[in-house]
Length: 342
Image (tube, rainbow, N blue to C red; front, side, top):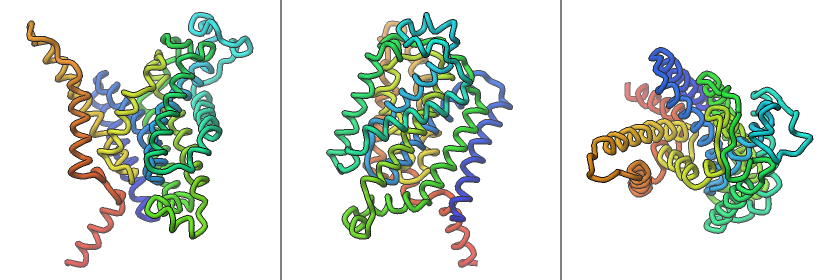
């Protein structure tokens, strides 16, 4: 447990360093990039709480982010704007307006409730069947968002959210999520779930209720995704259902795979590395297009490079940058070796 305290301190310190460095630079573009990075970090850690402990890939994570974003939007768009932003909204909700912080909490709860209702039967599945059904669940969630006009404005862009997500707020939420993920990992549920990941038959023989353990982790991951969606919604202020589908799913999974799905440290490292790579590649793509001068436009360079990077990591380092041990454990082990050799 001591290693978890060290890990939490180091990861929160890294988040604080990113925020302080960005504030000192005072460049608006960097502020936007780091805020977006911290929101991505929340989403990636949320996915890690389920995927890293259960060993099952979940495509549905971004769908719960969408439910969180729309829930927070409905609760915070000013009443006088709801007639324009959501013309088909149910009458009893038109006058509802709460603070963004309360809406963020409600968004996480709504996402968790939806996950709790739909996910339990799916938690009995493993391997390819679990992956396929999680993708099917993403399609269901996307279809609901795309067609529930009263709540989401259908496939059209929803606008009018107050811009309340700041860099410090995103940092505080990211730090809290780091702590939650580490506490869950060291809890009895987390340890039993990882045991089932390593050997499902042996864990079941010891009395582990594997579907229930997976269900708890899935609901927690959905709650974090809902909070992350609300955080993102109040940062971007306008969005459509297509913002919560395949492209975003691929990006979050890439961050987790490159960083290391089995560790919270890997989730943080992957989010930071891929975000900076993504922004750098987008800038390069824009520069190439600006100087192409009739040679044709460069399209999709960012996605292609990230896809190749993920393939390379899966081949050369399938466990990611931090495959099995948190940074606190690694540093403690290095210190012991140094003391022994001295």
